[in-house]
Amino acid sequence: MIVMKFGGSSVASASAIEWVAGIVHHHLERRPVVVVSAMGKTTDRLQDVYQHACRGSSYSAWRGLEDLRQFHLQETRRLLGPSAGALVQAKIEPLFRQVHGILIELEEGRKPTPACKDQVLSLGERLSSEIATAALRHNGIAATHVHAPDVIQTDSQFGHAAPRLWETYAALRRTVAIRARDSVVVMGGFIGAAPDGAVTTLGRGGSDLTASVVGAGISAEEIQIWTDVDGMLSCDPRILRGGYVLRSLGYEEAEEMAQLGAKVLYESTVAPAVRQGIPIAIRNSRHPEIEGTIISASAVRKPGTVKSVACLGGITIVHLDARDASGLAAITDGLHDLLARNGITVRFVQSRGNGVSFAVSESPSLPEVLHGVDSKVQVRVEEGMAALSLVGDGITAGDAVAARAQQALKAGQIRMVAQGSSRLSISFIVPETALPEATEALHREFFRAADREIFGNTETRRPGIANPETAGILVQATPALAKSQ
Image (cartoon, rainbow, N blue to C red; front, side, top):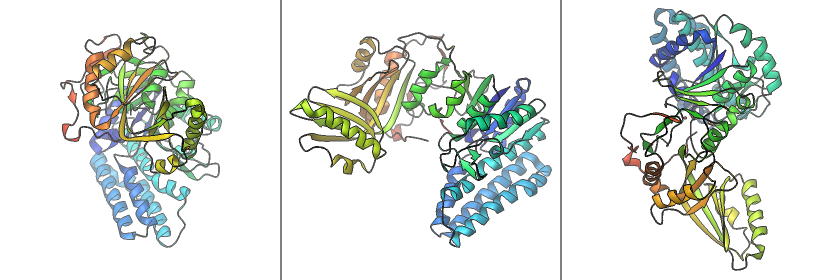
């Protein structure tokens, strides 16, 4: 058995779902279990609907929900033709009525709660999984729908629930593993059920987490993540076009890339699959003929080879300088703890002769936190920064890779260098406005002649800055170990 997860862009319309049905048909001999995200930007739109209802903007909430209803009805009819009526009446309309009822209760004074919000946000996957099941049947494929909360058992942390793995694995073996013997099982990602049966959502990357848990629970031979990119690339396609597709990656390399900004997978979401050594394939649903990237323990290893230039925006550097460095260690340790307690992620740390520099995620609470720093220490802050990281097994052995990178980058661009204890990456903090140019410079330096044992084909477009009109702007997106939920 295999698990095939299709993200929001892969099921964004009737034509996209038709295409997905063709991909699934091609893999029938491997007994696929299909996990789908909500169609397109449905979850974002449901978030807006919920916020309008909480603020008492009843018309805006109703209008947003009605637009979603009309969209799903239209795409279902385009997909199924005259046979759409049965699905609309039995599944789609009742689900919209259920959510509409919740919105009315909120308008009438029901207290908004995380549990209430999860009920609303779960609508997208409940709809897409029913529609995808009907589409497979319409194309002559035996398909069975499984309501994800019936098998994905979670704790009660609404909004970012964690699966209770042993209970979930048992439920998957009793249901999905058996039904997948003679039909394609389809289920929604991103959602589960708390111990009391209330619907929960799994948070960022939730559909990838569903796919990983399902794969581990049924002992799948492979988990396929179908998205809108060709695989893990040698550069961020939002910043620089024309990157090489990595044929394979080790689990640790993929995790490092994800932590440093590669928005294809979130590392935490695929942990169940990694623990069981299940290979994870990243494929492009728009170009299924492309081999994509396989993440596994048996990936080709060539220590010292740079495999990717990862980008992470939204960085602020905090420099601490002290004339007397004797007490600096205690002060910096205290600041590190203080930042963590305030939910500010410390990305990188660099020690200097008379001080230390922290690269942290941008946060509105940072100025207040820094007010508590010992007055003996001078604090300097640089905002609008980005991390540019070289990733590859063993690249930190010796100084050769770091020296080449610093020579390739323009003088004055580098505000901070961080290597830490990782043997997998070297990071350079540069102004966000310089990110496209700096990415291109590093890619040109390290990928002049790509090793075909490691890299597949390049994109057909000539390498270059992805969008000159927005050069320097990197939105830290929710394609993670990307992209979709």
